[in-house]
Length: 87
Image 1 (cartoon, one colour):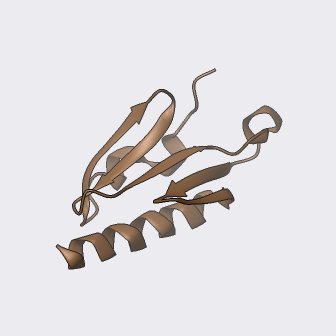
Image 2 (cartoon, rainbow, N blue to C red):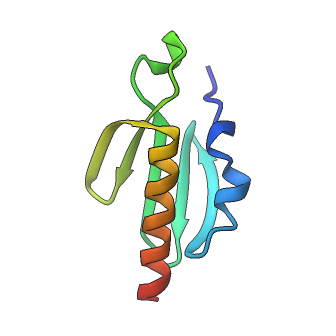
Image 3 (cartoon, helix red, strand yellow):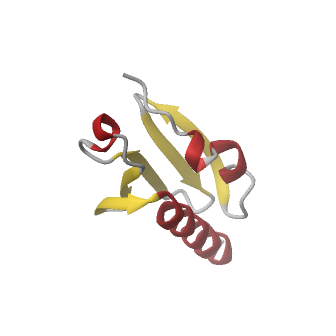
């Protein structure tokens, strides 16, 4: 089953300062930042099956197993902003 990433609005994410590209690869949403770091996002385990809007994120070597859509969007915005300021 393909994951529906529309709640995260990948098109809008691509316009954030510090974001270089956004793509879905092997059913994982990948956000590549301008400092060549990235964020990988998938549906949290079992969440899709029971209809929850929960996400699992990998930022660098840190995995965050269960985040709401708003938490993921905030994380991406903050991380992208930091990447833009380091550039």
